[in-house]
Length: 186
Image (cartoon, rainbow, N blue to C red; front, side):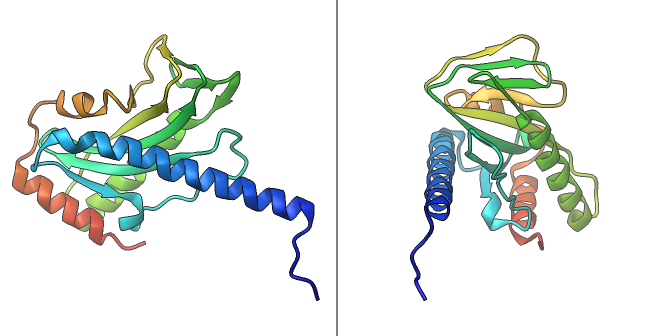
């Protein structure tokens, strides 16, 4: 028996490795820019929670990463999409990258509602989670009407977006919610 891969399997494996690498780099790029938020903010990676998501193999543009940002401004479910060199058009709920429509806004909302449900169940009180869609890459982002109930930003603007909400919860509450998020069961 041969352990050699067929050409189609080899291409699938290489593509999956490429998408996984882009996912890792995009998440790290957005995550690294949040150092300026301060000690009262807690960043919880999806992989540290029971809320981790599987990425869609049918997505031609690949990488999406995500994390929860919990701080005085509230709780945010950040979905990071790698746009690469392509221009992004956002018009309401529609996101178009390189001529292809992608369902990133719907995915960001699902991530936020899943996080809100899990946090609310464990905390015993209603926890509001805001959906955020952040793009990494060097292409331009043009918006013609932002989607309702989802914030859109680039990775360079993400820290300003998260702090623009003011102080809605205390630093102690933020720390407790971050601990709950890390302890959520899958």
